[in-house]
Length: 196
Image 1 (cartoon, rainbow, N blue to C red):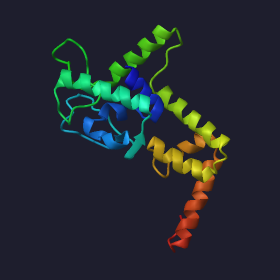
Image 2: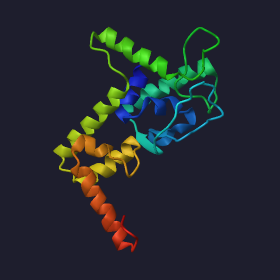
Image 3: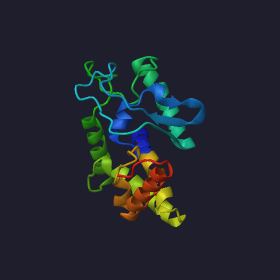
C-alpha cells in the first residue's frame, strides 16, 4: 500500500498506468520505472484491463522508493513465483480465485479510502494525487523561472500527455498552450511545411 501511494505521488502516474506495470518495466540499473503503452495485453486476466491514454516514458525513483520497491519484489516472488511478466501490483487476498492476480482499480480506490479513514481526512480518489503532483511541478517551474515552453515540454513528458494536449494550460494558464502553438507554427514554417 505504501509503495503504491508513493509511486502515485512521485511519478504523477495514472492508476491505470501503475496497474499495467510489469516487473519487466523496471530499469534496475537506473532506478527507473517505465510506463509502457499496452492495449489488449494477452497476459492480463482482468475483465476490465487498465487502458492507457498515455505515451511511453521512464521516470527515476528516489532511493527510498526504489528500496521499498525492491522489498516488495521479494514479497511478490514468494506470492506469485518468479515470473518477469508478473504485474507489479497483485492481490494479497486469501481467496484463491484472486490471490496473485493483478490488482483492479476498485482495489486501489478501496486502499486510498482506507488510508483516508485511518488518517481521519476527507476521502479523495487516487487521481487527486496526480493533480497534486502537477501542482507541485507547476510551483517548481514557477519558482525556477521556467519559460512556458520549458514547462510544457517537461510536463508533457512527465505526465504522458500528447504534444497537442491542452492540459498544461489548465495548470499554468493558457499562455503555456499559446506559446507552444506559436513555437510549433514557427517550426513548421522553418521546415517549409503548411501551417494549419
